[in-house]
Structures are given as structure tokens and as C-alpha cells.
Image 1 (cartoon, rainbow, N blue to C red):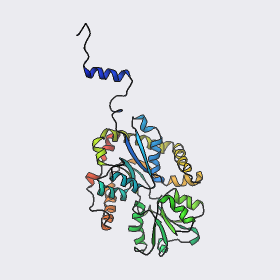
Image 2 (tube, rainbow, N blue to C red):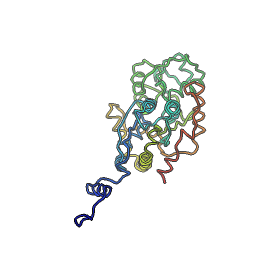
Image 3 (cartoon, helix red, strand yellow):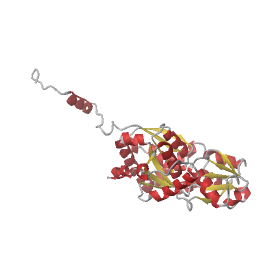
Image 4 (cartoon, one colour):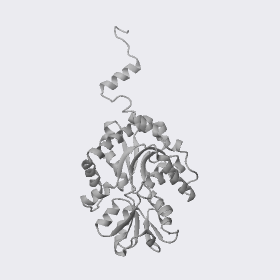
Length: 326
């Protein structure tokens, strides 16, 4: 007591001040800002929806957006520690783990049906083997690109050099097909559906029978180790977003359709709905990931794209999803 009043300790004074100004309790205001990478093709749209849904803000999470044409570019940003979180398929993840120790915190979707080989309609090609001597647009280094050159082309009897690989971003391929500067493209949605709907291309195969293509939310190990509370809160948001995809698909489609039309793509709602329907969104952490990842890693090792098959106990972090669910 001093002058008949109780002296407040510094801790009590700070606690009272925080309550007085209405600041949220620790656990919300202490969460780290997320640098979120995503690709602007259909694979990145579940993440784009999450960013626009308001779900992150409800849990006190702040974020910065880093949009790129394809996931392998996000992976490179993460290896360089310019981005904390990002989605891409297994091949890019495995390369990212090899180059920068990146880890998986969830599987977001499966996109094998969205990845396709599309040929120019006027050429009347029906098989991958008919691409011999042709110009094929490919985003070199991407998961889709790697699967085509390492698995699909060889299975069709095409060796390296049998076709001319024309390197370009996926978002430039439809115009290249229209201009007849390439004969085919290895691409993803919505670009395949745009090419087909506009009479430019014919889809001759999708990847689903070759690879279901799980798309993972990966993180830098630094971010996960320093900010486990932020990661768990973030994964809780994904669980809420999953409900929107299942129970309110129209709302989800509106947000994503608006993204593509704002970028100048002239795409009907019908064509867009077909493209989006090929993305199987089901965030979680399946227990059977390792066999498929092991197979992909062995191909990448054979092609000298990684130095070693990952230690999956280090590369996969299922405990974070389990904690978010609990």
C-alpha cells in the first residue's frame, strides 16, 4: 500500500492496459504474418479462396499474397525464404525439400484430372506418340512438366529429342496454340478448358490414370519451427474452408470465377464449372502418402533432379494437422 492505494505490479498494469484498449488476448495478436504463395492456375484457387474468404482474419491471422503462374515458382521462392507457405504437387515439393528442406503440413486437393496434354484441333492428333517431331509447350521444371518428360512421353515411346520442348508459362500456352507457334501443350485448368471451348485444342489425355497428383500445402521448416501456433491456427482455417467447398460450392465458384475474369480471360460460366469440377478439394493429411511420394522421388533421383530420396519422417508433419483437428 502507498498513500492508501495498492501498488500495481508492471505485469498487472500491462494486463489492465491491454484489456482497457480492447486488444485481443495473446494467441491472436502474437501470431506471425504469413507470406502465402499460390499459383494463378486452377491448382492455386482453393488457396486464393481461403485468402478471400475472411476465415484467416477471424482467427487473427494476417497474410501477404505472392501470386505466380505455377507452383514450382512458389517452391523456388520458398527455397530462397521469400515465402513461408505455398501449394504444389509432389514433384515440386520433393525438389523443394531436397534444395531447401521444405515440409508438408497438409494435402489440399488432387488435380490429376486438371493436368492434360492438349493438341491443336486442326492437326487431328489423338495419341501422345504422334507428338514426335512436334513443338510441345511445357512449363519446364513444373510437376506437370516433369511427369510429361519423365513418365508420359517415355511410355508413349518418345525419347528426349523426339519432340521440341518449347518452354513457356502455362498462362501463355493457349495464345501460342492459337497462333500455331506450338502444336501441343502440357497444361492445367482452366487453360485446357479454354482451349477446348474456343475450338483451338483437343484434349488427348489427362493425368489421372498416370498420377492422381495430390497438391500439398508446404512450408519452410524455419516458419513451422518458430511459429507452430500460427500454423495450427492456419490449418483450422483450412478445415473451415473445406466446409465451404462441400456445402457452398456456388459461393466458392463465384470468388474464383471473378478472379479469372478480372485477369481478362473470356470464359463462360459453363466452361469454368467444368474446369473447377476437376479439382478434388479435400484438405487433410492422408495416412498413405509415402508410397506415392517414394515412387515420385525415385523417378526424380533417376533423372538426377534430386540428390537423395527424402526422409519422410522429416519431410511430412502430420502432427500439425492432427493438433488443428483436436
